[in-house]
Image (cartoon, rainbow, N blue to C red; front, side, top):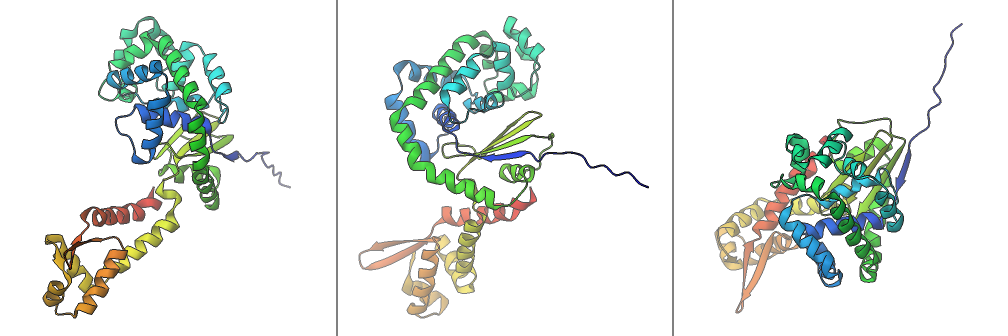
Amino acid sequence: MALEQSENTTAPAAIHTSSSVAEAIALLSGYASSDRQSYTQHEHELLQQSLSAEAVAFLEDWRMRSRWDFIYLYELFIPFPYFNDITLFLKGISSLSDESYLYYLFGGELTRGQISQALLHPGASADFGQNATSMFGDKPEFMQAMFAEIQSIRISIDRVLREIASLEVLQEQLQTKQSFSDAAIQTSQAFGLEPLPLAQKLMGKTFRRVSDYQAFYFIPSYYLTVARIRVFDDNTCIVVYNCHNPRLNVLEQSQELEKQLKAISDRNRLQILRMLRQRKEYGARLANALDLTTATISHHLEILKQAGLIREEKVGNIKYFELDQAKFSKLLQDMGEFIQLEEN
């Protein structure tokens, strides 16, 4: 007789949710960054107009002194996953000691002992190694300021996040963007993957560090200016991903690529693109060069124009065409990225 036992395992929870707190952090990070995205420009202008003079001064000073990204505030979702309650979230993190606050911000790259020592002697942070100092970009000296000025920094960050979350105009903007989050959630769920494979797909890579996670949170963000962020500990894995992440639009992207590739899958149209890469041309000259009728050339040009690969400019009664180099280069780039998506 053989004895067989099965483990009493519980599948990890997979929670898909939008997050007003995540959006507030994303807006703060994007506003403080020098690499702002065009789709967040309006909201950043609203922040500039609506934030208090004290908050704006803090952020302007921060931008000059540091390359540290406020996106690391997502690490504080681990102890306080209040994704849609900024009051509870800020109340939770305000209860942390300076040591614990910095421990989470550094994502475990520093031990509590190292942090405690640096709070007493900020100069000791110079010996923390590449992983920690790389967070501060080309201004690693600001890491010392993080330890020396942590109390005033915490107060200022708390104030700015409260102001951002309380701005009615931004809340209205978030409501108008809710459809993007809803669509992203539906698309990520439609992949039909288990939580860990889904997290890896959204992040675009296989994780080197994994654990027996009990909960996965998947949070789409409209204002996140980087593609995706993962924060985790032994029990929880949180993925915040941009709603514009191309991994969420594989079908839509393949359809657009198909349209563009069909447009160039003709030897005459390839020759037209080659000629238009060199200089602007009009239909009659193209027809003469390729020994085609003007009607046939017009047909080819219309296909290329609908695919967004050429531009048209009318000078007097003559229509000139030229290659849209940026769109054509993007087609080549998108094709390469699309092919590589499933390899990660």
